[in-house]
Length: 434
Image 1 (cartoon, rainbow, N blue to C red):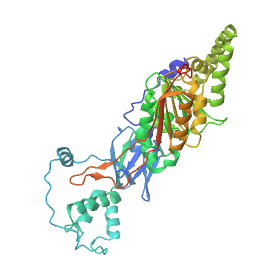
Image 2 (image 1 turned 120 degrees about the vertical axis):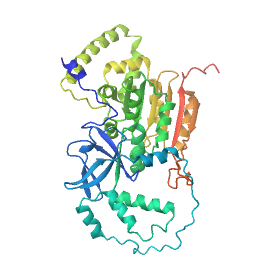
Image 3 (image 1 turned 90 degrees about the horizontal axis):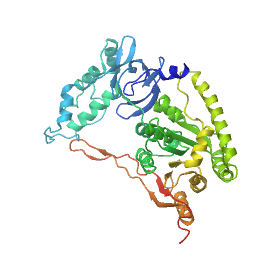
């Protein structure tokens, strides 16, 4: 009955928002990126006004909203660009006229605008929309017609952001979450850029039905990205040092379903290494006794885990402790890949303990903000003949502004994306004959 109740839960459409899901709000085309959870009392503060996020529930991701002033206060209304603007943007072959005007004669003395703040407040009280206020500002500007077309576009955009701000509803994915945190809180994710994150997943060969071992000390974005790519198949084991696991707050932004959350487990590094080393030493001597113990442990684990899941219909929090059954399975077969993102720890001390837990020919990828720890780790691995195909990569990303006659690299962009050490684990006795 309990399992049927869990399976009979309504499946949420990942393309449409629902009450309780996490969303990424893009205010004014990248001016502000913030996360929010769509609850009945959730609000968004734009300027000095609070707007309810209730109109966003049930809307598809990618929808555009505009703040409109109504009698009950500011409200987020669905905004659809005009068909003429869409046609011009899609066509893209508009002839570019030669500019005969320039801005040299324009003096910015705050006297060009005839509308005062009181007039704008009066328009708002009478129910004027943000677009109407912008058009009124343009009509009452004494220098607007004297400006170049580029300056006119900048002026219109600046006024639109102030009086008619727009909010883009984005779906939280590994790319968008990493982009938002890198722009606002880069230290929480270890200054990991979105292209670096994608390169980590590719070099570690994270595919369906993989058992990925992760050392995530970058807020949980690495664990969530691996779980998102697996899509409910395989397992993600987040290992850690000591007795207290690091926080994984960012992982709550991914909107993972029930099956995917069940595939994310945690295990201490000491427990993982002790299980891996101790059972292999006693396997040949106590094969029969270990098989009997494994059968009893599997039955006890199944008896204790199933009732705990069936008590509530809500999806469990990701990051439950790994069961003994999974630990013995990984002890026998090993993990299929390893990803490390721990800028505060020594890379070599982690690798020499975690590499024996991998299966042979398993790929690994290690991220670090600095080059020296990875170079030391690579040198020690070469001396110990622990891996092949060792290489240190530096991701490179350049963002361009693409506009008519204004295509150039962005003025403010990240010039550094950290380093990645990748390779393939081999048997230490492979080259012993040499």
